Length: 594
Image 1 (cartoon, rainbow, N blue to C red):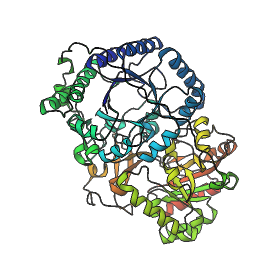
Image 2 (image 1 turned 180 degrees about the vertical axis):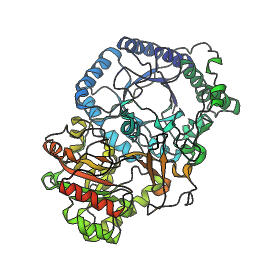
Image 3 (image 1 turned 90 degrees about the vertical axis):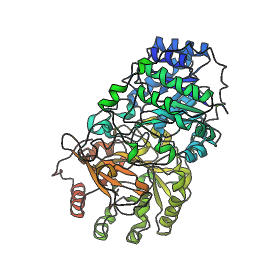
Image 4 (image 1 turned 135 degrees about the vertical axis):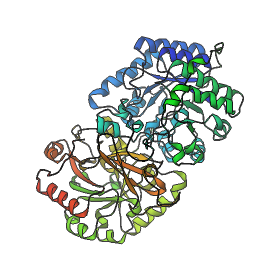
C-alpha cells in the first residue's frame, strides 16, 4: 500500500511550499474552530483558492475543524462546515468534538471525517468505535509504540501518524494545563505551551520533549500498514515546510530510511536539543526530553535550502468509502436510573482512603471512585455497592491483559460500577459493569452530551473547562467537580525522573502513590505529580478548585452529582473538606475557581 505524505500549511505561502516539495496531502485551517489559532491560517477566499489549487495538483486537502465547541459556537461551526462543503470541497475534515462529528455525519453524509489525534485514539477498540461513527481515518495518538500502530492499522480504517515535529508531553487531547492556569485552552487552539517553560529542579525544563523525527524509521512505518505520515508545523515558516517535506518525499519515493546527512539537514531546520523516536521505539526515558537552546537557534538555517522545480500534478488518490453512521444505542437495563444518582461523589485519585474515613463518610456518599488498580482491596468490600473503579487514562496493547485481570478482580470484590475514560472502554466492560463517563470525554456542549447520553453511561461528568451550567433534560445523571486539584496532564514519559532519582526500575508496576514529586514554576506555584503504573504520571493543579457555592445553580441545570476530588490531602484534611461540603460552609483555605 502506498504511503502518503501529509504536510502542514499554516498560511497560503506554506501551502504552496508543501505542494512544490511534493506533498500528497495537506492540512490547514481557517480563522475559527482550529487547533492552531495563532498560525496565519486562511481567510474564506484563501480557503476556496486552496481547494482549487489542491484539486489542480491532485493533492488531498484536509481542513481542521478540530477544537472543542461551546453551545454558543455550535451553530456557527455547522455553518462553517456548510461553507467548506459547498465552496471549498475538501477531501476530509479533521474533527475533535464528538458532538460536531455526529452532527456532520447526519447533515453531510458524503463528507469524509478524520478523527483528530486530540480524540485520544490509542487502541483497535477506539478504531472500531470510530468506524461505527462513519470516520474514514484515525490520526493515532502520538505516544503509541510501533506495535500498537501496526495493530490499529490492521482494522480496515485509514490510519495516520505524526512522523516529524513538536511533541506534547501530555497524552494527546488530555491537556488542561494551559486552560486551567492561564485561561488559554489547548483544546480550543489557544495553548500557551506551559510545557516549554522552565521549572525549578532537574534540567530546568522537565516537561519539554524533543521534536519527533521518524525519518530513520520510514521502512518500519511502511511495515506497520500506516496510510499517511504527518509532518507537524502549521506554526512554522514556508521554508521549514518545504525543507522537511522534501526530505520525507525523497525517503518515501526511494523506500528507505534517512542517512546521517539527511538527519543533520532536518536538525538544521529546527531542533530542540536533537530529536526523539522514543514513543515509536518503546524507549521512553529521559533522553526524550530537550529544549530549544541558543545553540539550536544559531544552527537553524531553513532558508538555506533552495527549492527545486515543483512537482508535477500527481495521480489522484482513490477516496475511501464512508462507513454508515451507527451511533451507540442506550439500553436502560445497562444503566443506573438518573433519579437515583444525586449527592456527593468521593473520588480518591492517587491512593485509597483509610478504613476510618470510609466508615465515617461512605454511608452518605452517592458513589466512591478509586483507581482500578486499587479496586480489589479488601477494605472496599463492605462498600462495594458504592464503589466505581476508575479506568486508566489509556490502555496500550501491552497493558490490556493486566487491565482485564484488574477488572476481574474488582468484579470478584463486589464492584459493580466502572468509570470509563475513553470511547473504546464502553465495549470493554458495558456488560459487566454499570458505566460512568469521566471528565476525559471532553463534554463541553449539549450536542456532545446528547451523543454520550445515547451510550450506555449511567452518568456523565462535564468538562472542567465548562462552568457546568449548560445541560438540561439529559437521560443520564450529570456530574461536575465541586472540589479538588484539577488533573492538568497525564503523561507517558516520566516527569518525576526529571525531578529526582527514580526509586523504581523501568517497567515496574506501582500499587501505591509512593512515587511523587512536584513541579515548581517561576512564580513559586507547586504542582503535585503522582506516578501510576508503567511510569505514567499525572500532574495536578497547584491549588484545589472550589465550586460548591454554585451547587444550587448546577442542580437547576440538571447536575445531580458533585465530585470531591482528592489527591494528596492527608486524612484529616479530606475529612474537613467533606464536612465543609456536607454542611454547606465556605472554604477556609486558599482555592481557585478553575
